[in-house]
Length: 273
Image: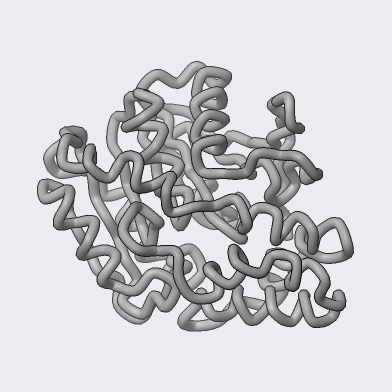
């Protein structure tokens, strides 16, 4: 659907594919699971009218390399994100992150000690008790899920993806999100990455959230069923100077449910910055 990552960043565990658009002050877009940078296909070109926009597929996701033996935990993703920032020669970019991308961005900021100009999180894993629901079942029964017949695996992933949107996907979008997880290798990759994402990797920085001084804002879909509004409230309590904005009629995927509102929020800037 007109989305490609033309650049490559070599790591010891495989290639991370990335792209960039536009010129101006840098802004980096960080996706979560089980998605890819395809989530930013509407947002990135619009932001690129005034800024240099960077986006990438995490190792093990999308069109980046997927293979056995990769470290796909949040700590490893944060280390690779730090390396990407160095590769791009970005010392103080704006960062926008969604889902587990929020945890990656926070670990990079608080534990890898990288500086951001500002940070925007929406419907993001950040801390608290988020090892729950289907995600917890993936952790506890990886072997069972790995052994599912292909048709059952695809049906499960499709249902999981649909659960994240409140208004439904546009034609062709669900197929694009499903594609990296299809076939025997895709099925293995899907459960491989979920089996390594642990709550302990967010617990490691929770005590530092109150120390954040950079401009921070949160946007949250009021109808998010993956990370319901209580997770936004938990985060806002720990970063009290941050702005919290609710997006009505939207679920976990603001990029799909409310792309116009999300873009308006992202281009509005930080009043205090």
